[in-house]
Amino acid sequence: MQECFNLELGEALNNEDEFLSECTTLLQTALDDNNIQIYLIAVEVILQFIQKLSTTEVVYDCLQNIIQSLVLHTTDTNTRVRKRSVEVIN
Image (cartoon, rainbow, N blue to C red):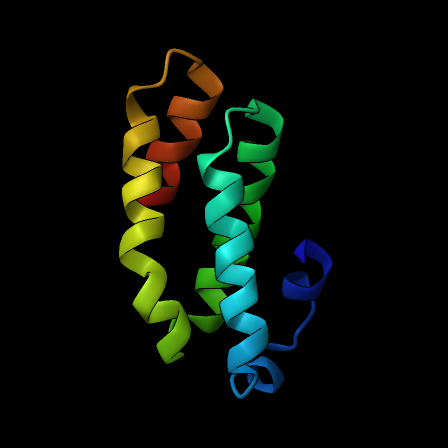
């Protein structure tokens, strides 16, 4: 997924609602995971995901849940997780 969103496919993905819906589900699951490495990778993917596809309805609908998961990690005891979460929210 990360490789896909690093490519310049933003316009091609705008019409792929089913694919974007699956991506949002996977990203939400990764954000809710207790594994720090999975969370940090998910945050990187979310940055690309939101930057390229924030105008699509599917991404806009899930944005609140994604931000809520990020906000919950701003109080994490792990400094990297906390710092990265704050950076993404800003």
